Image 1 (tube, helix red, strand yellow):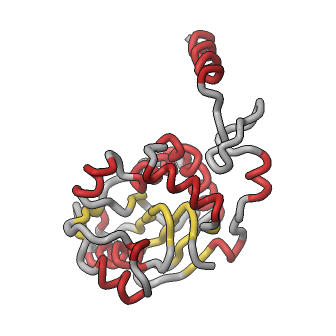
Image 2 (tube, helix red, strand yellow):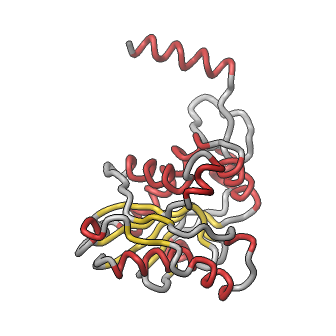
Length: 222
């Protein structure tokens, strides 16, 4: 069965050569998801530079800064149905979590989309990211939040005040008993002002979570 699977995989690689999820260049033998050039050139965040405190959560960590190469890749993931990127993104987030948040959470969850936006897009990119990261962490991601009010995209708003007002009371706890007394790792895709993470963390804390830490693929402000 393994040989058969390997043959199929090799045949698919010939038909659809695997490309780097960031530069879109063809991957060389031994490379997976990310080419060696991008691994060297991407805007990695290391040490305390990868960490940021916020409202309602104690710490948020991100492996990457949100620059041009990361932005282009993420836009394909989010808007061009490149949902397969979630495996590579999840591995990056999981490594960052191991480095900075090990032993600081009891369950993993994500920032959910509204039903309207998920229906339009066809998938929830933060959920896929959280599930892929959890798998790498030998864990599972569980639903703890639901978005009960459709909002404008945060990326289209100016100023921290507008962003906070836009998502205020947009989320509710899906199952308060699930988070009561537990430390939650909340995963989202991109952190800009931290308004969305703060609001979701606030809801989780109100539902009884003893603490919230966060992880995102990238951070827009450093």
